[in-house]
Amino acid sequence: MISLDVRSLEIAARDARGLAMDAVTACKSGHLGLPLGATEIGAVLFGEALSVYPDDPKWLNRDRFVLSAGHGSMFLYGWLHLAGFKIDLEDLKKFRSLHSITPGHPEFRETPGVEATTGPLGQGVANGVGYAIAGKMAEAHFNTPQHCIFDHHVVVLAGDGCIQEGIAQEASALAG
Image 1 (cartoon, rainbow, N blue to C red):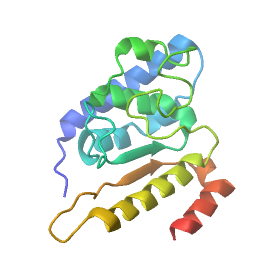
Image 2 (cartoon, helix red, strand yellow):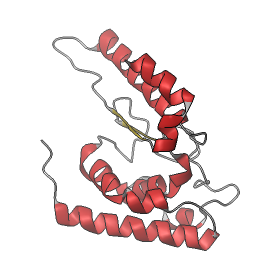
Image 3 (cartoon, helix red, strand yellow):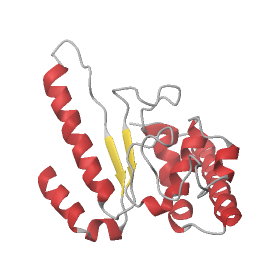
Image 4 (cartoon, rainbow, N blue to C red):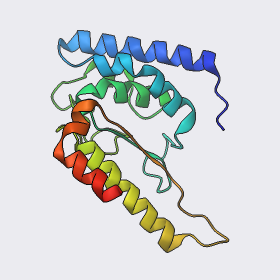
């Protein structure tokens, strides 16, 4: 059971909303619905639930968070910044700018902490299923009764548009 410091999470959620509003306003484009509406989800995930290490974003046993609804990317960038990943305020000010590490949709290998490139709706659901299958395979291969090497989790934030796409339905069928 997670013990939440509700006041700290409320403050972090307020800050994340402000970052999203400032970034989208500055670039005069972007989607605010997800960053504003799912802020408390981000507060719990990045404040308490996810096991991630911003100083070592490629740690093998980290939890994976995939934002399937990639058009809401300021949600992810704001939380990665607040969680301590190498995304500073200047990077957030360059949101949706050419050659920035905060493009309009999350891009794997471009932004520290981004686990998957997402753009087409539903793609992140399929990525999440693949990551979960890979994790279970690693557990089966490397874990022993004496040593738990892999026990990470995969969390996907997907909207209704993501779930309606065939790729998400097919990946869900594969997942069981």
